[in-house]
Image 1 (cartoon, helix red, strand yellow):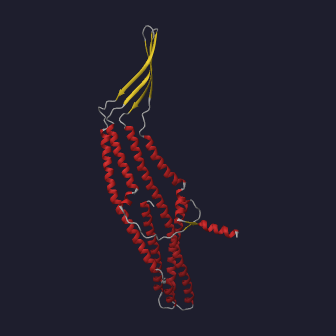
Image 2: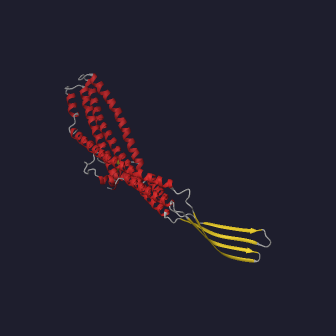
Image 3: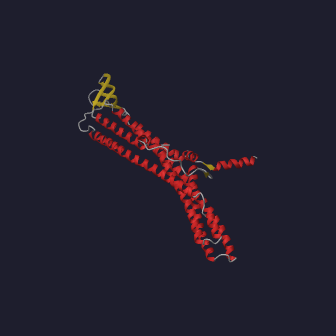
Length: 388
């Protein structure tokens, strides 16, 4: 009983579902580090701007070579201040830019999940292609062996035997290629999810489309969020650049000590310095930020039209591929091979007609897998698009 339980647990562990593969892949250090590094990079950019200037500490000592002792020492602390609120606007712009970076990060995460899911179903599709070819290869191999016996007994021509052997050799090559592709696809997936052995399980054919494309779906796309945030950030930069025309003020506070002959005195020092915006009034920065904001808003409008067309294309492709797969599924309900094999054995059809039946059956099965995979890929694109 213990052995049976262990074997059962091993069998269950060998199955790998779609979302288990996604979860395992997202937990891999390389992918997790990539996402976290992108987020940390965006946050560090926000922390970089909008800070106060560092204070300055000044020490000055002056002596004069005169009769008697003449010495002066000054200790001074200076701080540059912006009274126009530019620093606050820079921080606000950086926070808005961070929203754009987060939207881009969300878009990248969706792409990673989509890539994992596409690999998952590619592995399933190639495995089904291999199983399909393997099934018909076994049947054709058995038929060829039976034909050799009949040819030796003189019941059929050697041409039919040679023709079936040639077709069996061609099908063997296709089977070996299909096995290589299936093993490569599964190996790629297992490396991504960090598993040595597993069997991806799932249905290739996706559900039918249920939601229509609406402006609300388009408006929630990360690329539009990023463009809006970037345009808002540029508008804030323009506002900050216009305020840069106001001069910065540098305040100083310190102490002065004077020794003049036998007289020693000390006192406080207060200084004020004001920039004169005569040559640089940030005209270029304000103009560039304004043009950048208008450019991003124009790109936002164009991106809306592009995304609407893309969403409709994905849904049409999803629906068309799914309907084509269902039509092939219904046509493949009854196999032509048993009837063709019986007719060939009875001498009603020749080897070429039998091979044609095999090729038609294999092509139909492969087309069904291809259409089902294409429909699943379109479905994944749709879920990636709307963020499901």
